[in-house]
Image (cartoon, rainbow, N blue to C red; front, side, top):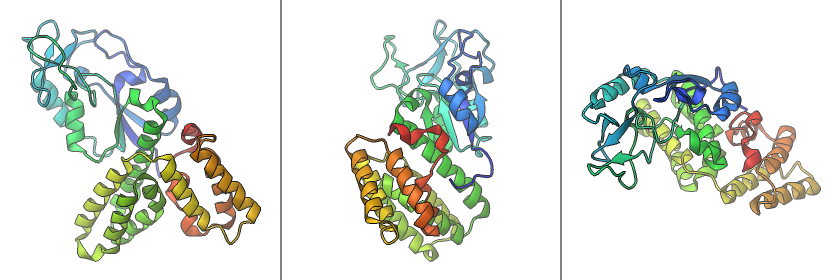
Length: 319
């Protein structure tokens, strides 16, 4: 895996770390976050409701009114509107979070929910579709490229791996490109991530290739902004079995001259078994990595796709 100078800093709803900050004085401790992710991420916990001075325990709040622009009020005393306090806190707080490489939010929360948060109409019923928590809305508006996910959705293996891939890729951009920005660092970053991009979206992969090939046509800042915006958009597309198989076969093409017919057949069989759901992705990846280490060139060895996140997380064991 490409070395990172430090752990990515990840914002997180404080209740997910076991902090007793919820309205009922409890928490929503996520064992996945504290027992698996904590080894690889530096968490920065925030509870917006405590941040505006609401007590613990406290009367719960809810969103009411227009789904696109709801108000936050106390559930049993709706005349007590805390919208301004929550929005102003959120706007101020997110300005301090530009260093983050990702954020994990508490689902369904009127402050932290990323989507499908209940927004109540004047008749007291929740409206179809739901809305976005007020803090989450300000966070995603301020940092549209930031990988953001709800803790509950991380139990889905595909969503989980996609989120963590985006976190590490964005962290690499922040630490190796944005801090030492040049046309060359952008080209090197793209070169390392070619097969990762290909696995997520062929169209986006080709478009980014054309962009990098014409670096002289844009100012450095314009190039960097255009590139990372498109890059993160491509990575947000979830890779499929078909696209993974396509990438694995491309990488195998670099090894054909040096691998025996028997070894090549073994790799192809593992790719096919993955395609049909018999084996997890980690099996062909492990085989490919073995031969890349022996026979690959520097270009293929440095491909982020082969090790996009710490192997100890076991993410590809479940794909």
